[in-house]
Amino acid sequence: MKRILDESPFFEVFARHEDGEPIRHIGSVRAASSKDAGVFAVTLYDEFKWKALFVVPRSKLKSIVRPA
Image (cartoon, rainbow, N blue to C red):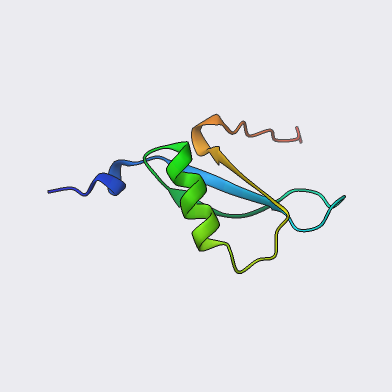
């Protein structure tokens, strides 16, 4: 039997550590909803002293590659 989490989407986690700094990718979580992803991200990445934390569904990210 598959676990529910195994079928959940990935969310990418971004953070801003200090005011005025750029937002940086710090990891990812897997969750059934964006609300759960936020809870998981806060729990997993709390060791970092961030000022703002963002979770974005991986499926919503757009890859842009510079032409060669």
